[in-house]
Length: 303
Image 1: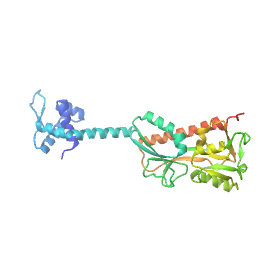
Image 2 (image 1 turned 135 degrees about the vertical axis):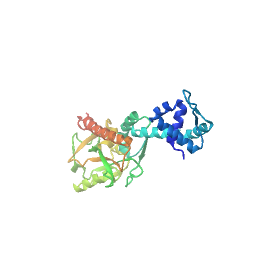
Image 3 (image 1 turned 45 degrees about the vertical axis):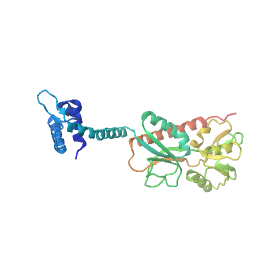
Image 4 (image 1 turned 30 degrees about the vertical axis):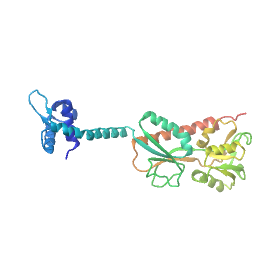
């Protein structure tokens, strides 16, 4: 059987023209290289080089040329494999990421841009869905606004404060009490993940908002608030894209609802590329939340 080590020795001698230079290229002693060529010749049943001796260079034989021609694809495959492995360890390769609407719209654009700037040849695949059970065995990383299964590895990306959205002029500037939501017409997300926790907090406080419309579309919620259909309680990052909308006002809740916690879940060993994406997600997520609070929640109300 011909192995790549022997074929690489044949290729090196043929390219460099001498056993000495080939041995230096491959990191062998000349005697070790000679033994490898001898082993190859026994396996193919004949000489692959004529060795004139003295200062004259070895000359590849017809059998040697045949073996080298057949070895070409194998050697090219080895080079490609080594290159792929080197790129993997350097942060290249492919990463499959599960995401949801807020993360897709607000957090991932910065993450993807920075990751591709660092690793231009990286292959980033995004899958947007919110299944009850995140497909951790099919994806490298999954963003989720719940802790996920107990056997998952998780890091906290950011804590997302809940705020009240209202059409401008409906509410006085400043915080809104949780009690003020009782019986109030409201638009809301479907009662899953974080929204289920929000509504559980309402119930624990004896608050019963009048949910007049539910949609999984963040923009649909803000559009209906703008139209006057009702108020909305939303996590900060979900309404980030409306931060400069003059038709909306943003209010802190008192007492505050528990923050929405955005997690990044995985299971098992991660590639260097996936680890870097996770690191960037935490950095970008925390930065976005801080910027939102500074630019909107701490800003004086518009006249």
